[in-house]
Image (cartoon, rainbow, N blue to C red; front, side, top):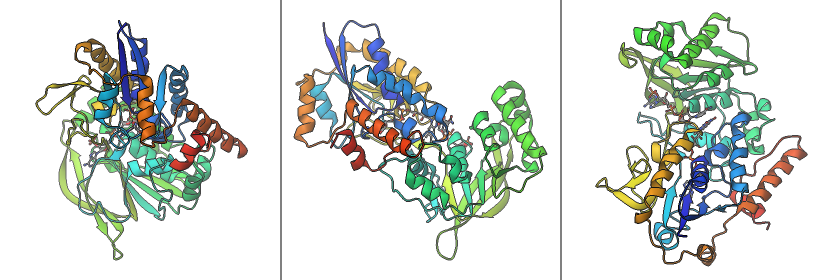
Length: 451
Ligand SMILES: Cc1cc2nc3c(=O)[nH]c(=O)nc-3n(C[C@H](O)[C@H](O)[C@H](O)COP(=O)(O)OP(=O)(O)OC[C@H]3O[C@@H](n4cnc5c(N)ncnc54)[C@H](O)[C@@H]3O)c2cc1C
Ligand SMILES: NC(=O)c1ccc[n+]([C@@H]2O[C@H](COP(=O)([O-])OP(=O)(O)OC[C@H]3O[C@@H](n4cnc5c(N)ncnc54)[C@H](OP(=O)(O)O)[C@@H]3O)[C@@H](O)[C@H]2O)c1
């Protein structure tokens, strides 16, 4: 029986679902899959993006783990594509590759002052609080008043973590340094700015409602933002999510503001203009233009400029994928250009043997579940493309191990992940917590490799 030796780069949900779907797919060939990730632990943004106080979503890890625990996918953690292994290497050892490398960087927000000290990307902050090994251990949390730009779920995650009392995050898996950092935060006011109206937000009702349940945090909304236009009224009628968002915001408008020690303000119709520096050169205020509905779901500027004093700003205006050596890349969208998962070159021609799935295929939008349907589409092409797969020089399973060993790559495997997992659970148990994440990469690798 012919055999497909497949490399999958990226052990986030997209890479794991794609591997699982292929193994279960009806096919006339055998399959062996090697799954590479540059992190020593799998699960991508489920481990390093989903907020620690969302344990139900973090629980998706259990389903992904069940797939890996079956043992029919070989894992190589701590192996970075483009550094430890290249496209030429993959061509020598495999018939095809699926890239599922997601996105970890912040999309840019091109306004003056965005690079000032005190102005941060939400993705970097998320990586810090979720204990990503490649980000600094310390995070400067000195601001009393701060701005979060964007009206997506990441903006709400970041605003919630910034506004929440550190002790309320302690039952989660946050690393010790994150708890210590948040505990010292003097924050009193978190301002979230959306450039469109409350009925055009990208965040979802559950995540909005959760803000109103934070202990010792008052929600502040402003009546001027609720003079709905026809498009907004139509959206409330036709879309259940929008209807619920309207209801939640209405409750906050109607209830008296309490006396909490922290406030979370939602500002709509606020188009970012500038981050303004103070005398010490760091963030001192945020300037925005008031917008108004254009009647079609969009907004137009009113010319009215406003300024709020703040000491820190977080832009949560989306994520952005990173290019991979030797692989086509669309610089504008931050994705591998593709036709339903088949990579396309600069002439829009299919690149044989190269596939994409997940956020690096579709862009950084959508929930974990969406990566499953993505993977199905990509796999159905891979299976049908048998005639154009690569013919590897060294297809044996040992040859890749020999290559990594010859390069001194300290890769981790499934047993290693189990060791790290158990170690983190034991660290948590000692403090009556479910888990405490290990953050430094060398420590993760040491524990995984049993050294
Ligand atoms: C802050 C945040 C919170 C979220 N919360 C939720 C939520 O609550 N619920 C929900 O349904 N969705 C949530 N999402 C969306 C969800 O995380 C994504 O839909 C999903 O993770 C995308 O999967 P992916 O596998 O394409 O990418 P990723 O999860 O990013 O996985 C990509 C993997 O590729 C690896 N990789 C990257 N480059 C290389 C390389 N060069 N070599 C080797 N490996 C590499 C990475 O280490 C990573 O493990 C959230 C997203 C963010 C950003
Ligand atoms: N709990 C969860 O389920 C959860 C948590 C986190 C993330 N996620 C998912 O992960 C995906 C990514 O989330 P995300 O929040 O990064 O992206 P997103 O949903 O695309 O939201 C991005 C936000 O940034 C705004 N924005 C973009 N450019 C801007 C600019 N120049 N100026 C001002 N605002 C700007 C957008 O406004 P416009 O709408 O006006 O463009 C939008 O409000 C989403 O699918 C999200 O649902 C889910």
